[in-house]
Image 1 (spheres, rainbow, N blue to C red):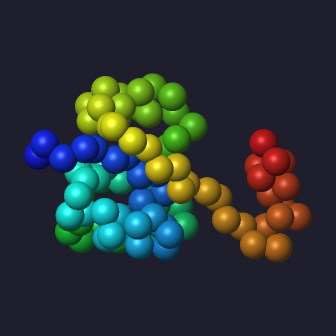
Image 2: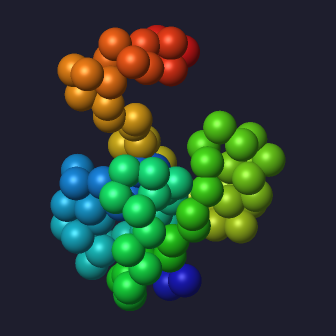
Length: 95
């Protein structure tokens, strides 16, 4: 990685984070992390480092932080269920 500050972006494959990453690439080294539950792992090439994993796994999260030592974190990960999902997954959403 270059000498630019490192930004770790959670939920990197989602709409909001994808847009932010494109805007930040010139000024920052980006590390995107996502579990790819919503859109699947589209593979393909990315202009940033990508780690697939689950933010609920503290050991995995710690290993990512140790590996990249980010200067900043943008937390954009979320489980989006919509109105129907709110009733079906209410315990997950409130948890």
